[in-house]
Image (tube, rainbow, N blue to C red; front, side, top):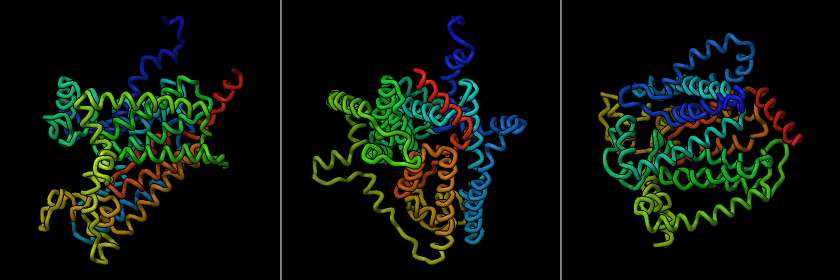
Length: 451
């Protein structure tokens, strides 16, 4: 068999599955039950420190990463805003005072993933990293279905994955509402990451140089992640809606200046229509014959079913969300915050106020939680930080400008519902140099012209 494969091909066959596992450990970190206190992201970040020392000794590494200095500056400003609020309010909630450390941890772990992908493929590019992110989300959704339908696999996951072994011991759902979960993928955190990957998959499918089988693969994964992802977290809908909007805009307007990667072609639309025609009867059949799928599907599209049955579009999540829009009453809170982000009863032994829903003031809305923590001052700095993260990615890879803008939009839209952080989605792209991605694209273009 060795006679038919070169060294790089053998490396890809043998180690690509391990690269997928590492990417999953990064994108959906969790704690093993036998190693409490350290999740997979932290372990990878520790390994990344040693890797960084090796790479710093190589020429060109620091040069490729010099634009990160401005991001670390803004990340430090976020931490400073958190520290000022905590000191002024005399609280013990240091959630965002260490944000710059969290940022460094994500980057270090991302560098491990990107470096491993580079080592087994001989190169790394934006498109290659996108493929790994899509495959990981696809497998997470697949594992969620297996967990829901196999007690043996569910017990295995709940035994060794600490995040779920304590909170999920019975039933087919995470919270008793028909919600699925994967290996480290659950709730709105998973939903925001599924949303970003749906956008990435939508852009990959727009590549006019794809072979037919690759186009089918991207679109099948897109539909699968959307349907199952909504059963894990309905926040996934945000990514689906933005992807459809991007397809419509890209197909309608031929934009210039690098705003889009490709124009959707007729072949893509044809495949998408065929897949939808195949998906609808399959989903309808499973909905009527499989009780587990029936419950999960109703949870995923609860608003749609309520609209059909009652004429009103509503979900249990939106009903709860309405009660969480509690605005600060003091000017001081608007300016510098109250210094609380998590449940004060857990972070501050001297707190004597009321605890509501496990959140400060009973509020889980992202924008309001940030205001309560470090005021509009900190919220503005945090927004500028994310905008500059996206700007750095766009500066390196202008061809993917709209993709990064859409990913940034996911972050700001999800904040209307819950506080989350999608810097980890940008981080792998910050570990790719502009030159190596350009070299890969030029090589692909030459191959396409030759064929």
